[in-house]
Image (cartoon, rainbow, N blue to C red; front, top):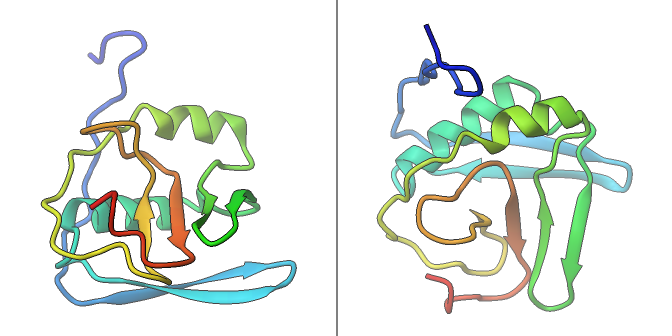
Amino acid sequence: GVPRGAMPPRKLIPIDDEPWSVVFRTDVGSFVLQVHPSWSPLGANHFKELIKADYYKEARFFRMVKDFVVQFGISADPKESAKWNSRHIEDDPVTEKNLVGRVTYAMAGPGTRTTQVFINLKDNTFPD
């Protein structure tokens, strides 16, 4: 069995190298996020799992720093947030820059990516 408090192993969605898109609908309009698995295979796979689980449904943007980033990724359902926050994913090698309009995971150090992402409002190459 799975030890108490541990998450059971995840069934990973097969990684596909082809870019794919998802539409986010907000109360002020919609935006399309295009995912490039070749840029971040583990991150793209994890993001696809979150999308398929409707994790971001009713999620809110909770951080906006002018001329820097806008951030989202906390589920509207606290139980879902708690479940996914323990599912850290390993870092992918950095192959692209954090340029304006690109999305990347927020992290607190190596191996800490979970659900929160931010949209770059300008070229932010210093975190690369």
